[in-house]
Length: 258
Image (cartoon, rainbow, N blue to C red; front, side, top):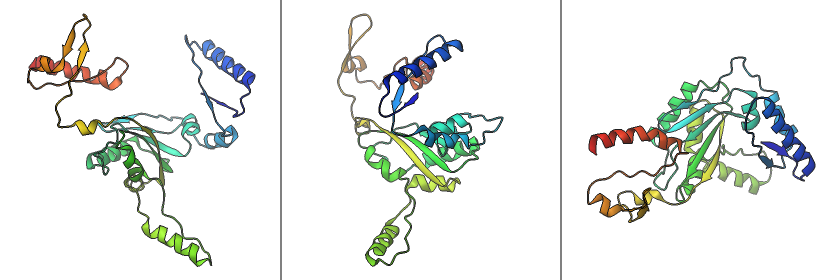
């Protein structure tokens, strides 16, 4: 990724692109792709976060993963440059959907176990990485609100003082912030990738009717194929890592039940 000036400078960008490609090719890479990110952020404001970070000589960023989360500890200057004040990234594997009104006991336990196993030393900030369905997007802010309690300023303005006092009285920590602080972190942040659809609304209903083309040119009709039998249907692709992980389990189910 290249941080480019917001005002363009096309020739400079081309030269930097070519330099990076040549550098990677000289290092032995067969194929090199360069992407650009245009931003108004000055690199001089971003770099000190990494430059001032004391990277251990034996820094390892071993991924901790379980059924519900992936935890990425941040221990190198490069990661500090990318993620700023975060001490770890907690990726929630399952999308937040319309049924989720709180952080479940299973999810909370998974986060606690993974973070403790990762042995995070820099606990300035925990950063969550989230996805959601259409309905779940509405609950993300309430569950992962990063705001801390508002401070009541010293002022002689009674109206302003009343406003801040009311805000402080109404404030309630989000479940994610409460959990992070219990684990020793000072604050949280999150990145949210909203998705579409509402698959949670289909739970318990009959599978919708559809037909698909087979590799041999024939078609398969779901209802005719199942004939009233219980069935497990999974949609997957070669580029989907979780799909490849579930393939051996599907094979075992097929061997057992046909």
